[in-house]
Length: 333
Image (cartoon, rainbow, N blue to C red):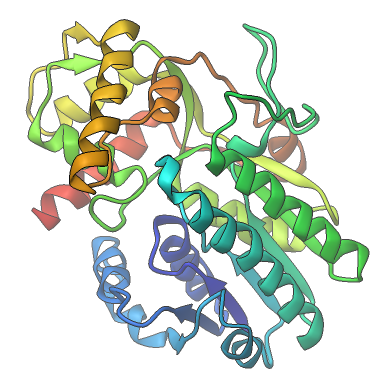
């Protein structure tokens, strides 16, 4: 029996399908009111919609220690993918609750239930900085500073909870995916970028980042559950690329002209300040924040050498990932 948290998200849903294909019995916790049908839609996109009936759904929340403990009974492996992803400064408390205390609850429940191993989904946000032109890797030390986002801080602290579990006797392994591209709920995570480009845009940003296919994340997690070293973390990176290239591929996939105007840093600085004011007066979530602007113009690159050396895994190209998510978005339109 495998338990997956965050099963209605991009990573979680692909994890469910990966485990079912491997013949595992899969249980997934979901919050009350969660859109469980998104799992069926993702499965159907891959021509395996009937497998959704094989998932064992249990209503629970990572903040509900009693329900979480019940869900852990009889479980061998836990894949902890539940997390809050937000760069809205007003969500700081929620990030600390879900990402840090929620992870602590999962670790504690796994220890109590005698779970054999836990795979924790962290993020490249928890990887330390590197000098310009140097790819970041798992050995980069964490540095907290004025520019550190609350999301990054919450993911780092969540890793500390996982390592605390290791010290208390729980076998753990961690993965640090970059920007995960794959079918998922509209408007959430990378699907917000996909949905925006589906409508078309003339603008691009000059930043670079790393991107990875959701199918590769799920496959590596299953393999690392078996082969990963205890307490180690593994960067899951398909390709380092500029946002301009990502936007061009998405635009072409949706039949739009490629973006031709660069959103200059000064424009973005004005934009996040204007959005902050709009959010203050309307109560709505800002469309851009100081943290998202920093990410969109930053120059980041990450290495997947560690996981490739261990697993010999071949990651999909950015073109393959974009083609997959564009196809799903068109089906959902």
